Image (cartoon, rainbow, N blue to C red; front, side):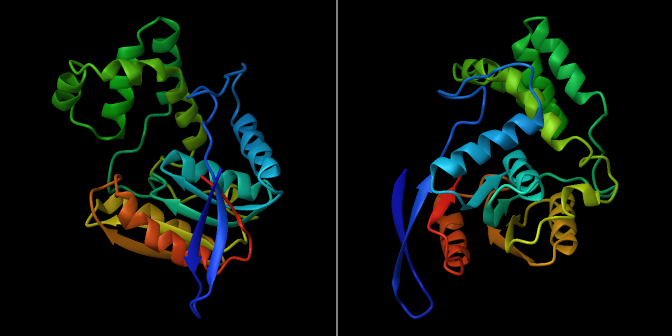
Length: 239
C-alpha cells in the first residue's frame, strides 16, 4: 500500500491510499481450483476489506471488466476508473469465438502453454507473424508461466465480445461514478465498446487520451485518474 496526494478543485492537498494486488494465479497470489469469476470478485472484495472497507477501483482491459462485475455484484466500490475494457458490441471487428476459453484450457491441460499464449494473442488481434517472432524472445517464458490464467481472462469477458450489445446483467446495478478511458486514435471497435458502456451507465463519462492503443503510459493515465478521484471522498484506491 502507498499513499498518494492529489489537488482538489480549490487546491487543497488530498491524500489517498493506493493498494495493488496480484490477481489469482499471478505473482505471489495462489490459484485455488476450481476457477470461477465469482472467486475473483471475492478476491477483490477481500482486498477492499483489508484496505479499509470501501475503495475507488481502477482496472484495465479484462481487469476493467472484472471491476465492473464486482461493482454490479455489490462489492463496496465508491467509483470506477476503467481503461479499455475490450467489449465487442458490433461488427467493427470479428467476435471472439465461443470456444475460446475451452481451447485455452485444452492447450494448457496438454502442456502447450506457448500455444495457449499464441492463441490468446492472435485472438485479441496480434498478427500471427508478430506472435511467431515474439515466441523467440527470452521473456516469452514469463508469458508461458501465466498461461493458465488466460482462460480466466476469457471467462471474465464471456458474453461481452460477441458483437452484440452489452447485456444489462453486467451493468444493471452499477450506479457509482465511472470514468471510462480509451486511447486515441486507438481502434474503432474499442471506442464503440467503451462508448456503449458509458451509454449503459447512469453516471459515466468517456475520456480519450492520446497514446498507444491499449498501452497508455502511466504519466498519461495518472492525471486523468487523479482528477477523477478528486471528486471522491474515499481514501481507498485499489488497482
